[in-house]
Structure formats: structure tokens, C-alpha cells
Amino acid sequence: MEDLVEFLKRVGPEYFLEPLRPHIRTKHLKKSEYLARAGTVFREMYFVKKGGCVMYYLEGGKEVVTQFFFEGELMCDHYSFLTGRPSNQFVRMLEDTTVESLDDETIRQLYDEIPGLERISRLLTERTCVRLMFTLASHKNDSAEVRYRKLLIQRPQLFQRVPQYLIASYLGITPVGLSKVRKRLSGNPKGGSFIKRV
Image 1 (spheres, rainbow, N blue to C red):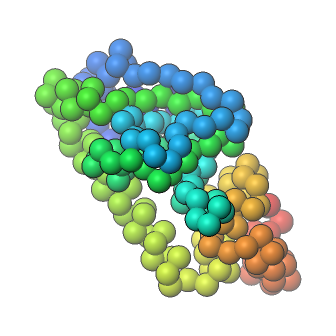
Image 2 (cartoon, rainbow, N blue to C red):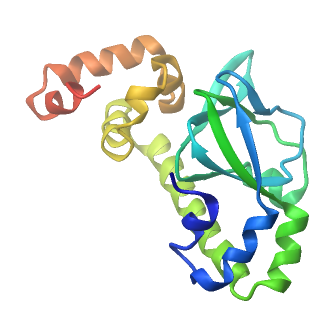
């Protein structure tokens, strides 16, 4: 099971990342438990060590899913974390989940103590920005069917671990709309092989 330090070693030298360990906090959460609620400020950067969660906001009383996070992924509302402003996001566990975290004050302190850590942080932030821009472009330009296909190819595990109504919300369609997309693809030779996996 990969932890936060092992994850960071993918983008930085091992010798200066080990000193991070004493500063990392571990939290265990049960399925349906909340890690964060709208109105709070994200002061910690989280790493999902085990399990998974959904991030969403409320619009007209309905959940609008912005992202899913599973093992080996960093989780944060970057807008709130970087600006210090309250978030409009909720983070709810989809499974029993273990997360590790570093708080913002510790991170700033470690920038001075650990050479290269700030560069690693910048690289990870850039990757997050690219992923977010890709997702926004897809939601704006692609049809529901294309968005579904992309998600199926890029993150197939979601369809085994996430309720269909949350996937529908993430894709920007209704559960009925998702059922129609799945039905169309199940009758399409090019899409059928994917549908059989979910």
C-alpha cells in the first residue's frame, strides 16, 4: 500500500523526502463519513492511502460532483487551500478510507528545510491544473457519450466503486441520461467491449 512519501518519490529524490514522515498525519474514516464540508477552509493537503471519496458542491439542493479520489491520489480543494478562503465543497467517503495529510503551515516550513520540496509541489500543482483543464474542456466540448467513453478508458475503476447517480452527476447528466448512454453503447460494437466491464 503506497503512502504519501512513496508517492512523492516518483517526482523527487528519496534522500530528502524521508524527513517528511514525522510531520504526516493519518486519519481513518468510515464509509459515508465527511472529511470536509462547505464553509470550511482546506488547510491540509490529503493523500488517499486506502479507499476513496467524492468531492461535490450543492446546487439547488442537488449534489454536483466535481471529482473522485482513490488510492494513490492527492486530494484537496486547491482554491481554498491556496487562498485561505472557505470552500464550497463537501468531501464524503465512498468506502472505509485512510488518508494522510500535511497542513499548510508545515508545508511552508518544510519548503525552507527540505531542498527541492517546493519544486515537487509546483510539479504536482501543474499536473493538477492540466487535469482540471482537460476535464473542463471535455465537459464544455464533448457529448455525454464521449465524456462517458473517456471516463471508462481513463478511470475504469470508478464503475466498480462509485454509485451510478454520482457518475452521472460528474458527467453532467441525469441518471436516466447515463442509462441511455450505456444502452446505446451496449448495442455498439465499438463500445460494447467497454460496457461489459462495468
